[in-house]
Structure formats: C-alpha cells, structure tokens
Image 1 (cartoon, helix red, strand yellow):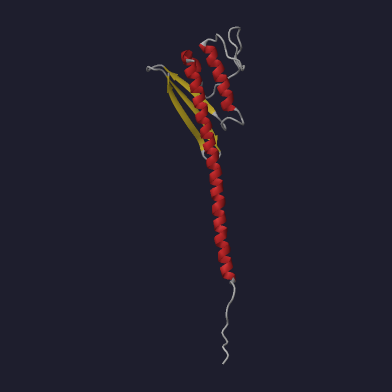
Image 2: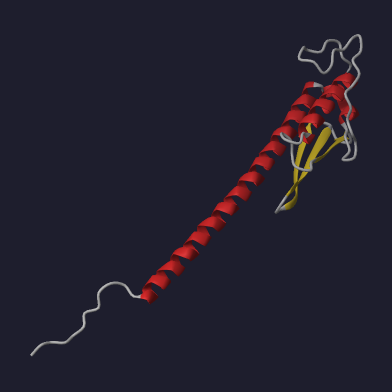
Length: 163
C-alpha cells in the first residue's frame, strides 16, 4: 500500500501577507519615533538657546549693577545701535572705557537683542522682555523670552535675578 499523503512544504500566501503586515506596522512605528525624536531635538535646542540668552543678559546686568531701569525692554521695543561718544567706545571688539551705566546698558541690550532676534542663531519668532523692580531690596530683573515652535505653539522661558 502506497501512502498518498501530501506533504506541504514551504510557506503559504497567508503567512507571507501576515508577515508583511507585521513588518509594515513596525516600520511605521519606527518612522513615527524618528519624527518625534526630531521634534524633541528642535524643542530642546530652542529651550537651551533661550536659557543661554537669558543668562547672557543676566551676566551683562550683573556687570553693570547701576544700570537699573536702563535695562528695561518691552516685547514691542526695537533696539538700534547706540551712538559712540568721545568717552565710550561701543560696538567694537575693544573694551569700552569710561562709559556711563546708561551707555553700557544701551550697548548690552543692542548686542543681546541682535543675538536673540537673529534669523539663524536666535530663537524662532522670538520676543523678549526685561522688567526691573526696585520695590524690594535687592532689586530684581525679570527676563522673559518667548518663541514659537511649529508643533508646540508658543514657548516661554522666564529668569528672575536679584541685583
């Protein structure tokens, strides 16, 4: 007696289709993770820039402690290059000599504003504000930076320092 049993060898079409669906879903998951990672990287870079910019102007304010209200800045203010005077060399790589606190503050704000608002190195759609309050002792400055992220909307970073 000959046995007439069929032996099925290989993989069936259904198994191949199921494997393709599983691999496809896995690849979509990896692509989604990649996009999320890129968005998080962009957000982290912008936040780090905001922190660095805030600490930069805070250091400039600390170096010119008598600047007071000269360091105030509103969201809508525009800063132009301060005029050089006979006693104060501004906007150059050399150190300023005999500047008044107001001249130093004007120069600091101009350089800082240029950095924050720069299209490539600054924050996207940046806005900045510096508030001064001498109601309490020591006086305080509140530095606010706002920028717009494509997927997250408006982001804020606020730094308060005491002088």
